Amino acid sequence: MKKISAALIGGGFMGKVHAENLRRLGNVEIVAVAGSNEERAELFAAAIGVGRSTGDYRTLLDDAGIDAVHVLTPNAMHHPMCLAALQAGKHVLCEKPFTISVSEARELADLAARTGLANCIQHNLRYYPVVQQIRRMIEKGDLGEILIVQGTYSQDWLLYDTDWNWRVESSANGPLRAMGDIGSHWMDMIQHLTGLRITALCADLATFHETRKMPKRSVETFTGKTLRPEDYQTLPIHTEDFGSVLLRLGERTRGAFTVSQMSAGRKNMFTFDIYGSKAGVSWNQERPDALWIGRRNAANQILMKDPSLMYPEAASYADLPGGHSEGYDDTHKQVFRRFYARIADPSAPVEYPTFADGLLGMRLLEKVAESAAKRAWVEV
Image 1 (cartoon, one colour):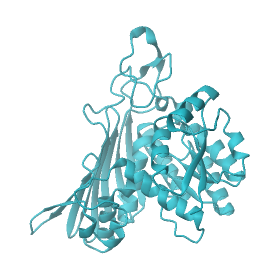
Image 2 (cartoon, rainbow, N blue to C red; image 1 turned 90 degrees about the vertical axis):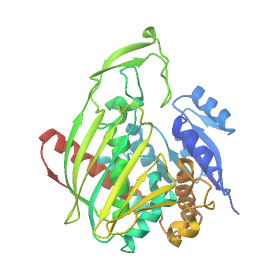
Image 3 (tube, rainbow, N blue to C red; image 1 turned 120 degrees about the vertical axis):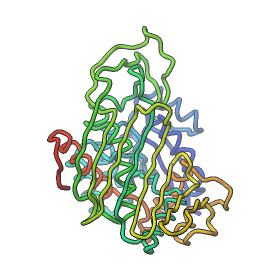
């Protein structure tokens, strides 16, 4: 099998996740990494066993031997890096949210379409096996007409004003933080599963910590909880800690969801309930193998992940038999497998989120910001 050469741009939390799961594919080799400076790039390369590193990602784009790049940097860098990579003829996989504006996202989506290069937005949370089972149940009419969607994405890693990450800074993150970081996942997921587009929304956003204490040294995502007073400086914050959104999907479906990065005790609770005219389903990412199925006139069920009991189209997203958990890491692997299958064979189906999906996500985030500013419903 011919090896596909990949480079990672960004060496933080997501850099580790991507490196580990790319190596599970077997036909992809990580040949180089780029970091924010030479020292950080060297440290990351050494940690994951890659021999080549650089503090200037553009040197990797000039290398004809690199087939694909993963853009894993703060959001403000996604547009220039993806643009340069596409212009250099590289296949591109980018973390979400796609960009910091609709105009940036549209430029990249249009360019990707013109080049024909494989392009992917890493909405990996679609690819838990039982989540794909829900998708197939809805497609086959098991739930009937979809009437109501509800849920939350709640975390606590920014609960204290001493918690800091680049995402709290609008210059690096863009104008929306909790909505951009985790609300983008929720909105992508509910549309992916139901096949319905969000047509209108009404949003409310809140910033509980109007100032935060920024460390005087770099801290990694989900870390930095042991700083002392002399280790930080106080800065104003313009991104939201919490958001709630009322939704309309398609012509009749209604719903609501919240996002929070200040919900004490919730480490990564992504939940959704989907209720149809025949049945309902409920799922929680913190218990990823369990699918609740509810009925009006029959006993409710808990389906534990078991590919032998799932629709064949969903079972293809499970690599292990029943009783063997598949979680967060595995969702990345499933996206990578399909993205690199397309690179290896351009006639392969596009079974992953594309830059077009990223553009839709940015349009929705723009509408969330517009609605919150107007304190009113907006059409999408």
